[in-house]
Image 1 (cartoon, rainbow, N blue to C red):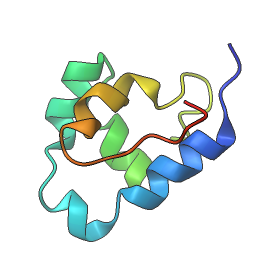
Image 2 (image 1 turned 135 degrees about the horizontal axis):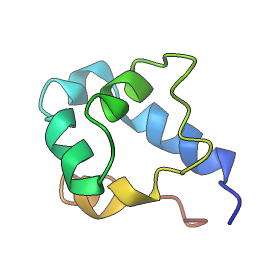
Image 3 (image 1 turned 90 degrees about the horizontal axis):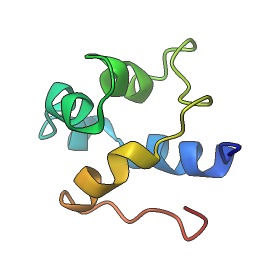
Image 4 (image 1 turned 30 degrees about the vertical axis):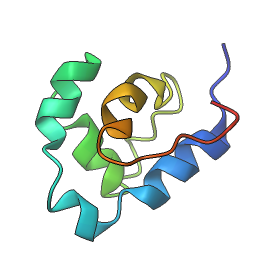
Length: 74
């Protein structure tokens, strides 16, 4: 299944520095089955962490609990 770039951009824009102060990215990585540091590096916009091959959908069930609203295309 191809990854929708709009979903990736939507999540990155939601992960503001203010929100990241209250989010335990390592715990979300573990819950989503991703290697530690994936979400924090993605949120920091490090070029090599794009989620373009796996998509952000694995994080959605956990981010919804924190107030995230996935895009309608998800």
